[in-house]
Image (cartoon, rainbow, N blue to C red; front, side):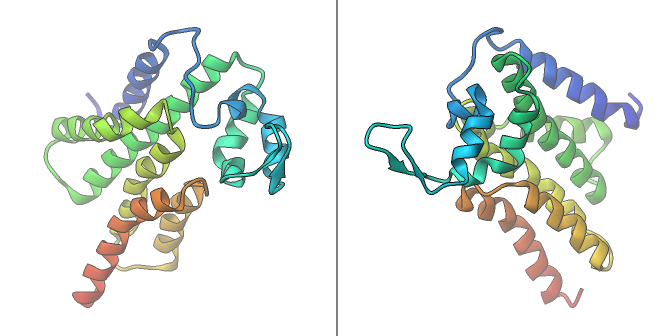
Length: 199
């Protein structure tokens, strides 16, 4: 298979697999109300207090869903809920698959067939499969981690490579700081290693 076809064919297979999961049924992700009523959820996410629940409550990490997950579900609100959810899953897994392919290509690890297999195993790891339908907001930063690493593999670190690394970090959102920090840890190790070697 030609190298430039690997990404689109991989994404197509990922989409087919995601849409084959109980068509017509919506999984109870962390913030189901984000999927059912994205505009209402995002309007409430800008306030520390919500009276939606009995006696009200302080919001817990709701602001973290404003971007990118909230923006995505707001943009796809015209679709049936289960379709929007399967599209989100496709994007999450597809970003991880493509990111790992890019990272392995930059590292020149193995032949193309090995890279495709390794990228698929990363995207469909037990960790991502167990969190994708329950807390996809924690799967998302992990799928962006290879993109951060790939940007920092330039021979010389420049402002451009730093910007390419910061963009996926910004896209991780602010739902769970621990998940974001864990996804950035490999890049931190790489930077320490490069500094220790005078690079």
